[in-house]
Length: 225
Image (cartoon, rainbow, N blue to C red; front, side, top):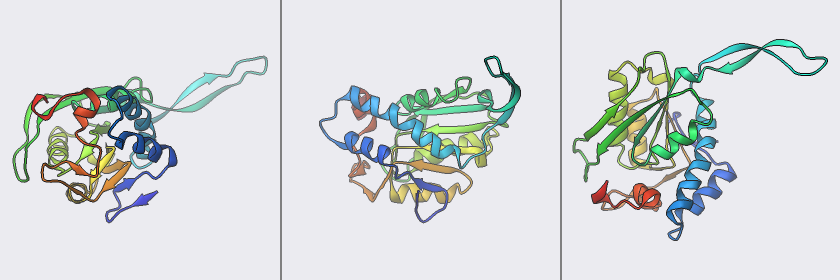
């Protein structure tokens, strides 16, 4: 596991993750394959993140099968105490993939009109969140570039009573300056990604990155988002 300047930023170096990332970076990767790769990679990133945040663990009384079956109490994750928050639209397939781990988790959706430069306000067009108090929370957005959207969302979760020490922000790619800025601003949050690229370009896309996440997932242009 590679850690960067801050202990709450974690890049996952596993060969499966890095293999899928290479396929996703390829310009010729079609939309359907890109969505499929995001769905395959997300559980691996969530697995890593779940080792850094407190999951709601309980026990269940079960009976094993067969002639020599035994009754025992065994650990279970109380997935109804987990919230999966998708930053729309690009975070939706990631949250859906994580749902396989946590089938009773509640969903939250936050839609933002992205700013085109640094220091501009984020404009929400949708905020639909369940109860957050006492929950373990996973937030999904494939890319952290400037970090402004991530900061807006995390501030909003905190205002609604979320425990940020139990919050994991899951991405595929960071731009290092933006990721470090938001991780420094929220030291209690765990940030997980497959890669940390060095910079963003003049249009605030991560470089080298994999282009616009919404375009790669769905074919939406920036103007259509």
